[in-house]
Image (tube, rainbow over all chains, first blue to last red; front, side, top):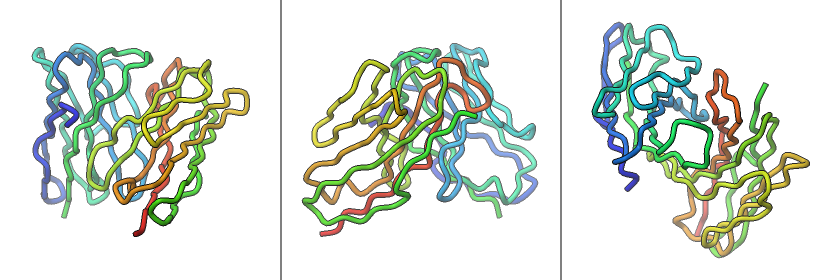
Length: 115
Length: 115
């Protein structure tokens, strides 16, 4: 158990809808990362937060947004959903926000299916 | 562009046999290299983290090597078990991030261990 909790585990929704994915990082971790993994693809970096502030941004679509709250949990909002957004969305946390040797601890993901 | 290439894409071996997975990278400036194991439908789990000065690091039956001069790494699995069936992901950390963030992920090698 990595200590990172993601909810919900599965989400099925229709095109055009909006969903919110939630992540609770490991206790003590200040940094949260969001990744997208499509079928048979590698992990694609979306965005990183450190202690409530946006730290780095990947190729995140404008339809997607995220935030990290004072209690350090994070939410990823996906709107105007398209079929191509169907994927596994992973949250990871680490102790530090830099490129140190802190390993990433991943949650077990939210599987989003857009129909 | 920072890239991480893994080979082979997939591999099937018999239980008890050894195998070696390869990772080549063009990431600069380099910080560290990580190997993760990802079981189907689960989040990746860290196996090893190596810095520039480390050539070898072991974690049980897993041994990772790093040649920073040739920018190559390998993951050797000894006496494979059925539970080793998973995707193995090579991740290289850059000192400065970009659209990929600091961590550049390979697409993984899918290992199947058969009885």
